[in-house]
Length: 434
Picture 1 (cartoon, one colour):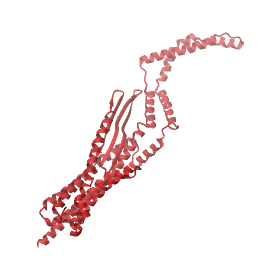
Picture 2 (cartoon, one colour; picture 1 turned 90 degrees about the vertical axis):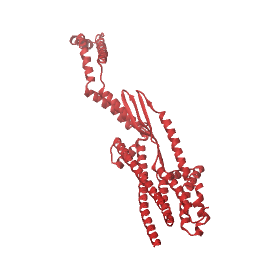
Picture 3 (tube, one colour; picture 1 turned 30 degrees about the vertical axis):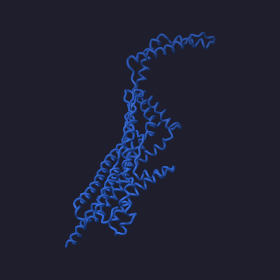
Picture 4 (cartoon, helix red, strand yellow; picture 1 turned 180 degrees about the vertical axis):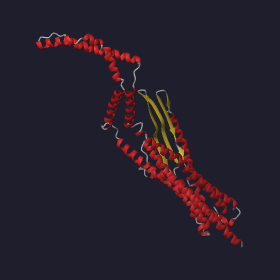
């Protein structure tokens, strides 16, 4: 009867933990997919807002300066003092032209035709009357200059010069690539302008960030449930082996997600740059200086693809001691607990089950990434803060968005969970743990 009751309890335990394992696997899959998708969207965002295509782009400057020139031409106004001064100068120019014409007419003529022309001009053209009308002429000229239609024509002339520059060879070489990139992203995200693209990407990224952390903490909740079950059945020796094997599957999922999900993200940008040109503000925002997001597997891939032997060696060491050793350790613990004495006492199995922890660098990776984050974050903060400027003519505000990602939380949870399982194994193994 007791054996039957134990079998039923073991079956219920397996079914319950299998269901919980499926939940953890679902959370892990969603976290992995969202992490990859988030990295893709942030890469698109950093590409379209990269400083080389914004602040350092001739096209961007041409458009902004063209707008300023067009605005200045169309909306310039003269103060009463400026109008009086300009009218005086226009009058002087007209008087000079009249005097010049009068001097030409009064010049002695030798031919009969010349003398007749001089006589006709002096008879019908009264320079004194013309000079008396000069102030009115000057006013009419100023009125024409200040006419909105004429201002619009001047603005169109100024804009035509900038449009000519667009089709000249002087434009920056990245223009075609920039157009192709933006067109591709517009089509990809179903938008039609840079502002709408940035708004959509920012909104999507914010919702994805919240969602990834929900799945991350959901996985951790599953692990806490497993540890709670261990506490509840700590005196039920007959259930320990089954529970331990099921616990290993939870650890495998943690390891898989921790290795593939993004662990650290480096994002440095100029949040806003504002300065004055010809009385108008020129504004750039969210200019990305640098962006990278990496998981542990990404780091390994980057290192082994480098030409230097030292980089390849470091990548191989990380692969071996931070990925392969944990996998071998988890597998060996299960084999040791479930196998017969001969296989359980095998040197290799016992070594990986009980002694390989001192060679595993999973915990070292956790500390290294944390220290890298702290050091890099401090370095970026100090360097970016040096760029911050606030004055009447120039304002620069920078942002450091470097942050640890959910992949780091999952990986450190795997390390801690693995330590707990190693401790449990020493207490429940039926064989010598040394």
